[in-house]
Image (cartoon, rainbow over all chains, first blue to last red; front, top):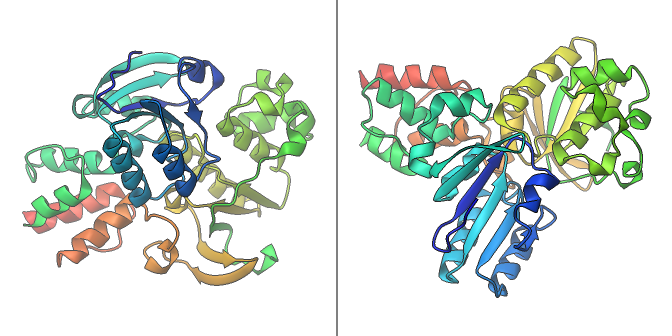
Length: 158
Length: 186
């Protein structure tokens, strides 16, 4: 895996284990003992470029995740988010997909999340908004795949 | 809080409470699951070779599975933050297992802030503060329960449509939702 400084990454895996985290040894990794306030403070005082979240965004509310990501952008940082939750892939630019420690797919979010069959076969499924818009596109109700629920709902009914 | 006061066979409690199970850290899995080890492991989707592993060396996901396996013989099974580390397919599998367990007259109590775990799974959802029941509902579309948690995505979607004046029924199944949208749009 390589990580560019101008992109945010998601490592999507069905097993968040030590083998996988070892691959990120060069970074400081934050686990899920940190809540929103602690993570905000950490980011505000962070002096390195890249921060790694080990499944710790999962417990935050969507609004809190968005605020943290805005703060990361403001501070000209980037992040790597290790997660098993397919919904969190929507927050990043580039996705690595692991199946039992094996890297099985990688790519830009928009391309990778269209690999519906493979993601479902691996058990991750699709993010809700991608799943809905994929099916609506199949019925010619929408013309593209959406990655933002607000945008989908607005385009669908306006 | 008296768990017996809670209604339903599968109960969701909106809570960020976690358990670290420090007392189990140095124990092997086969010391934690004391009854019907192999059968219990199989029921929760773990391989038999995990039985010699120390609890502290397991992934968070497998820790939760081991805890569940160790409680399969109990009448009341209380689980904390059970969806941690799980992928969608596993969650669906465990929701089916929970329903199966209730047919053996067991109650499952799920403490979680992950409302997706409650969707198509629990009978009742509770808000609790300092061991006191503050609110209860059997409707996952009840907005009161989302003071401290996000809505499941399908619920959020239907709420957003409602905001634009589009009324959709309270669908909990994606295919049913798609069919409803198709009917309106065609």
